[in-house]
Image 1 (cartoon, rainbow, N blue to C red):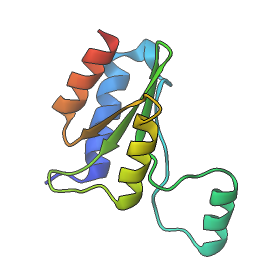
Image 2 (cartoon, one colour; image 1 turned 90 degrees about the horizontal axis):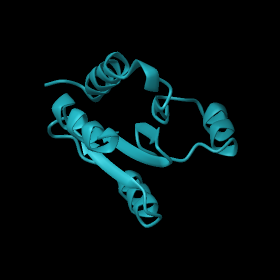
Image 3 (tube, rainbow, N blue to C red; image 1 turned 30 degrees about the vertical axis):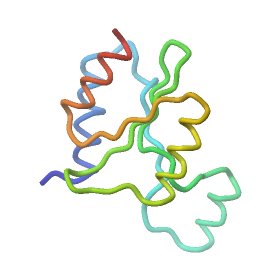
Image 4 (tube, rainbow, N blue to C red; image 1 turned 45 degrees about the vertical axis):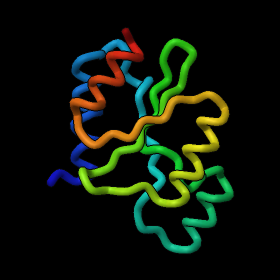
Length: 111
């Protein structure tokens, strides 16, 4: 089974190769990883929000959020809370478990 990191890498590399003129419009939000208390406090004070999706895609005045999970991965409570928050504001949020699903949503967004 592929890791979340591997799935995300495949999605980002495919996007960068398929849409070179749109590079920079799809980007990662580095919310995870082990950090000490001091670094965690600094990140919180500078606006890091726990639960934010892994990738954001800003295209044609619309922002779409992508959360990457393995086949059996589940969203945390904070991720579910953030998903509801941004969907209530009219943003799209998609759970991605493989490259084909990511390609599908990018195709629908770009047209």
